[in-house]
Image (spheres, rainbow, N blue to C red):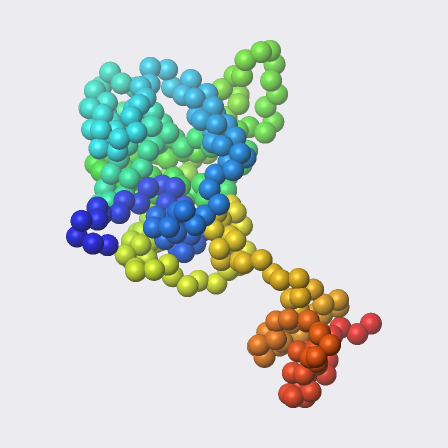
Length: 284
């Protein structure tokens, strides 16, 4: 970063991206144009999430939403609402601490100036990334002077059956108390944030291996960048070539199975020169 570059802020979505892969986080922040962008399915899921969030707000009558996309203004409005004892709940409240910013689905006022944090998900069960999500929010709020009485996740009740024409939010949602589990994640979360800020300050994206994390918990928007298409003559397409054999060939620099009239097979050439690949193919 240059002197004129504003400091980087890690939001919840960026943090979750970094938990999946630090290279993904770097690209999201510094080179987003190299990704595939949002798909139609992504927008459908986003709209679904917003609808579920609005339904959950019905469980907290009298709550007030923070309706601004400006982070600084959102933080200011949130503090004003929290300071007003007549406000029973705050929706989409914003909090910032040390270049880390979060928006909270629901903050419900409790006794003795304490608050209940509720994260709303359109999923039907608890997932690992949900824990990271609520722990991240808890981290920022507790360091912003908010006294949290408890931390909860509200997700869809898969057993719910619609009766009538309107959805009953009291039956539609299930609530899980994640207070202790969120607290237990705080040391690890602190370490992850430090790692993420360190990576974001690097001059280029880290060189990290690909793997199952590329598609879990979500398919990375930079999947094709890190996993270029395999050519049609790649040795991986050779029938009955087992994984061990392919690994040996790749270590020898053999990637193509192409055979032309003027050249011998690269596989055969390397096999003859090394004398070490007599059992490269699975025999049946």
